[in-house]
Image (cartoon, chains in turn brown, yellow):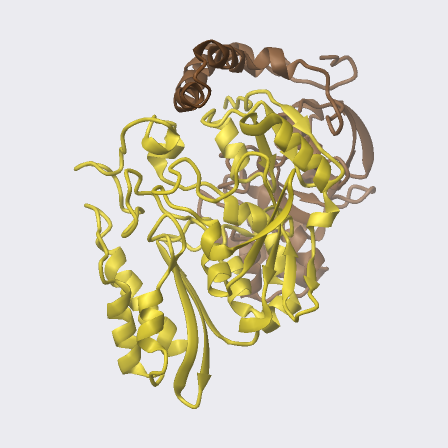
Length: 226
Length: 330
């Protein structure tokens, strides 16, 4: 992995096959047992089935084969906050990983890493998405906006950000970047939402402090300000 | 906080459906078709499913969009996002039951990324299976949910066959109620399958939820004109309004003349491994006046033969009430 041009954390990405090799073996064996028996029954040839079985236990070998039609290039140019950023992206890398650990845009938070909390919400072509559940390669042709990209060039806060301050929206603040991105997506699509529409649009973002009403107040104020 | 990555795989982003079919056919069981990714990436992160080749369908514009067909029905590309479906004027006008069902899926961000094809093809939520234990569905010889202490509150009322998991989809019951057709492509060409036959239970194949086999791609869903503009009903009950999967959901389409039910299709989700078409209810209410008494009979008819497990008895009155309301309020 050539990370010369990249802003990375103290550690580069672990190669996942190394750290869980033992688990791989167990999982492959279990998953293959029924297929293996089916194969033996179907072909009547134990030797050839066993060869397939053994090959299937070595994902590394097959995965290293050269990419054929449709295979992805690792070096991508991503449109992030209006800048074109060159970055080396693994096939199995989520957008949250790329943003936080390769592009140093740590405003985007990782909460659950399962699409169940909303802390990682970013905009793809102005639409809110969970960046933990998006492959970076699937977002390569879209305009990516993170919380860092909201303020104007002169450093003025986005109306949603300002409203969050004015209405004391956040409590601990961890979910705030995600809440802000959902609010920005809402106001882009619907500049004058009702409180119920705002509640629905913000429903994909959890707040463990329970500051939901403060967040809603902020969204409604931002709609008035904009 | 340590966040590790999902295991490595080869990623393909073909530029045509035929290219995707070719890749999925070539790699067979080692390949995984990726749509919106919300279900798929969880499987990969948990290391329960470990495909070597992932074929990302998100770049295939030919799989997106909602089109009117010549016969008056509509065709929805399999990669059309749930947000696009719930906000489509065409679907709201003709098949509002599908828009209503789609609006109740997960959360706004998930609906923005998720696709109708992915939603109907998603795997079951049984947490034992999700956890990666060697249950029947995972290739083993045991069901951990069907034991005296098994946590089976979310599990089935019908169709148990070693596995007792249920269909988790909100859109699938609506599609079965609308008598939708699933268009599937593989190396041999296109074929069309009735939504009702698209979903399969453990008695047919315990390791998959749909008829799709390695190398198959669901390319579109066609909704015939038959039920356009009918009276519809959709309701979902879940532990929480956002994110959660249904405890039970109900989708109905009916035509009423005067006060008589002329025809009806009614389908319940999360009570069986497949969306359960309530044919006994359909027979009981067809030709009957659409009133409280018929609705009550329909509710009682719906739950006949239900076989609950230790923790899911509550689903019986829940389903009964949902069916009663569907007949009364559609």
